Image (tube, rainbow, N blue to C red; front, side, top):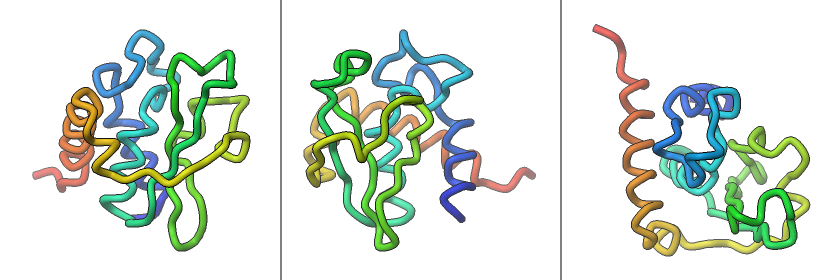
Amino acid sequence: MTIQQFIEILRIAASADTSADPNGWTESNPLWGHCAVASLLVQDYFGGTLMRGSLENSDAYKHLRSHFWNLLPQGEIDVTAEQYPDLTFNDLPKEPRERERVLSHPDTLRRYELLKTRFEERLKPEV
């Protein structure tokens, strides 16, 4: 699977109930609020390191607190970049984040497990 194929499946699997901001989620912006859980999924399939950037200095996005993306052997990748039309991870101070720490938040764990299940269902061949 390529990163582009991964993102296409992710867009289909994502929904309001897997978003960190379900009230802000829309069908036209399906990856809104999915950076943490999507980055965990990227790590499941491609390995690498989770990266976190603070959104505290962004008036438009500070209510989300953090943005996550991945550092892979081929470089940094942000599979949810489309959720922010005016911001990239390069604009944020960054630090690596341990998977266990991200998953220690009960709602993140719930959203990740639900998104992973839906993602994997879309990988199964139709019978």
